[in-house]
Picture: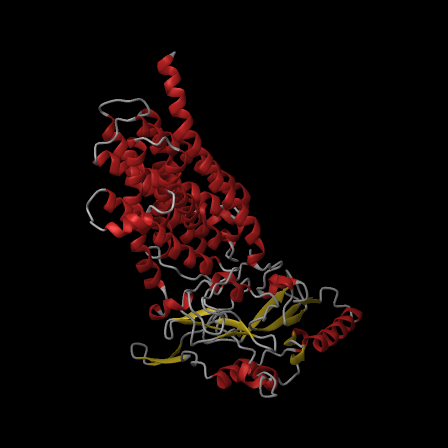
Length: 272
Length: 302
């Protein structure tokens, strides 16, 4: 019964309505101003631009839970161009690295399958930040805690969809049951492939053991700044534990030899 | 190995320093416990264990300060142990940070017992009921539990950074736990050696045994570092470029391991003039251990 989102980047127009809706619904701090009066120059100057196409925040952060990426592609002689968009957010992984890493159970999964940070109990240890394979969860100096997309926890538990999906004017972001969304994604992928989009792929079925928020991409995931083969980092824990135990056993064996055997040998030397 | 992962921005003087100080404490403690378990039951070996126990507890007392100061909400640190909705006491077996917090608590208790036992035995503290209670359990049981908690505290920090998605930390998996436990052994031995030099205890068989242990630990450390660089491949780049190349190869490998190893080899035979070189080797080994944690943690965040 997990809820999730399907983001069809092929029909995204890069309007950023989702970014605005996310900020408004969740009451996130605004972006810095883009204009400033420069007393030396005597006129208004533009500031705080990323310089990367229409991208205005650069990445997801504690106050940017949605981020529209803009990718400008050209062929070598620049006779052909393609402008790709991707509205990115927390993927609400089915096996979430941040949730596994959380030592205080501040990060929980609700009955609707979304991964939620409880601000009241987070201690700000920041261990969830490197545990996220996608670089989503972020620390806020203002609150001393971590923040990320909640899948609009308050809305979805009251029968509404996510704010971003509600605001999306093209239906690129769809909210619903993950199983239903997967059926829609498969149909749309088949349609695009039939139209000749051979590179089209779904990102999020197998990545990091499956994502509740998944994407239809028109190019390789790395083009969209996504890891190609993300894994849940805690999957390596058993092997790492075994290696540590072997290391400890080796130290024990060295101590056994150093502190006992050598004494015995020394007595032999004295006798010989 | 995701290019898009974010850094926790742990400052070098909190988390990596905890890894180092905790490692020295745990290393000294497991050496002391192991000597009690495996060593001869003579006065010299007991004296080595006592030195180890005197080091372990004061050092581990510093670490909660380093850890709590790093938190975004330091006043909530107790959430690590108690969480109403998750059960009291709370532990998350998938999180090295959660398990490590509990291990640190248990380890702190063990080192405190050993420390107090030392003080009572030396007559510096008069506390008759403690000795009566403490000695009800055989000393080897304390030593066994103590060495296990020491090993855990020394190694879990390596597992903690290995089980993340940061490129360098993920690529060095699964070796950091083993590397940190070996480094803890070497730096713990160095700390014990320093105190023994200070207390003029260098002219015995047990000191030679400690030096042998340290020598093997340092060789194992070099082997693990080479292995780590090989398995990390292209993701070892932060360790091979400025500024961490200098800190790691110059500070840790050369000054912190190879030079102490050479000094250790040079002073392996009893000699009246060796305590100066032994002191130098121990100081350099401790310095190298600190730089090992700093360079690996900070290069992983770069």
